[in-house]
Length: 364
Image (cartoon, rainbow, N blue to C red; front, top):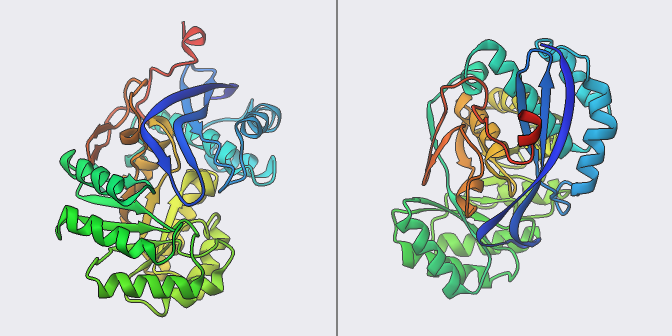
């Protein structure tokens, strides 16, 4: 199965409600899609969002990386030579992790198709379904309380609450949400690098004392402040999840060696795809650290690739793959089945996604 062409297209999908964090506000998914064709007629799909505030990637930079660097390096290579092809992908340009991730997932899609199995089974097959949380964006407290109640009414029992913009005011915000949804709903808190280390300890301790009982707090300090992250981790009872601090396997090893966090959040757009994400999973297993698999603002293609990874590996115990649930529509055919909080993996080969807007004319 030889790669003969790599092409791109754009997708835009409106969100149910604007997505707001300590870093940005977005009202639609506007991503780059990637299609990898082979000489057998098989095709694989990938996707990358332009998340400049986190990865540094824009829509234009992702497209240029795919079309001008990645495609020339990979056309003519064999999909079945997965290790060689992934090494070629890693070497063809520095960073540009989102572009690499989009091509990586398309290659894994094709590789699993060549095996005649769904991707999650090729990667390990730990479970057939997973349960995701749903993100509650940063807004005035009454609006966040309303959104939290609506999420629970939709069947979500785990909520990821965005904070990090107003310091100690986040304590009152989270107390109001806890009171609104009751004690049985799991709350995850994501500060998106919004606090200093000392501020994080003060806020998290206040949350513990107030009975908010968060399951975890994600990335309380700046991504580069590994010392501050370790400071927080060592001084609170609530588990600390590293997100933006871990892009690569090397980042994961640095964090694991000094126990700077209790958990690691793996996102394909940070790692550059599944190939590197599997290395982080392996490192976490060695250190006995559990992982979450999360996503940026992605639609069903990229989220499905992440879902296959999450379903494949037992070290992944938490899932934050709510991208399709945040979108107003699903423009794709096939793939995993998203039913509220439950994601059931497809049993068709690869990612299982077939109908993809933007490439219809090429497929006719």
